[in-house]
Image 1 (tube, one colour):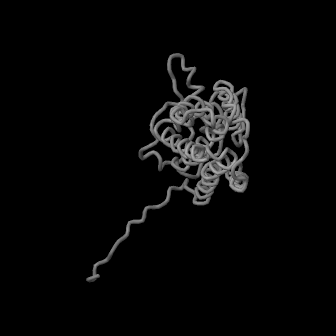
Image 2 (cartoon, helix red, strand yellow):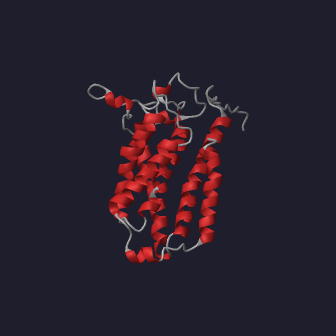
Image 3 (cartoon, one colour):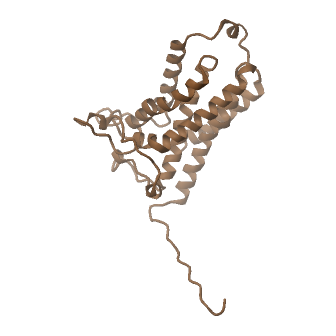
Length: 249
């Protein structure tokens, strides 16, 4: 234009960034996210009695959303950040320093401090790692949702999920996936797809919650039949296929 040359400044990709690794992590994370929404929402919504459908789906959506807030504001770094050292430093083996994920550091190379040198380098950004780990954190309280449907007040659920994600899930994640006490020698525990961090924790929590709260009302137990089996089948199918992201990612 007008004889003037236009010079474009090209910003090169960092040498650690791999488009394929990044794309697969994001795709796998999305598959896992779909297991929660709509997967668990419609599965549980179809299994429960008709009067609980809206409540069940709302609990699934709010649980997922609340974990996202916890994860971004403090939870991710409690599970995958620098170890918390207070007093003699024993806490450094059990939990990371709680602080926000927001900031320029999210575009740096993904890193789990305690695992430095103990595993191959990541070839995607910290924000990709945080998103991938978020969907695992989010599905866990939704797994024990079925144990408290018809037993727990919705307002209590809104308080319980952030507390549980902070005090139970983030600690469990650090113990194993964050390089904490269970992962350290001589124990060297491995958890490839959440058998301990997700499934055992959710199952134990659901059992204890049901036992503490007590049984559902007699009139609800008298005819506890599913309200929509096709909807439940759709949810189960999404969960089944979502495991390609769960294990594969």
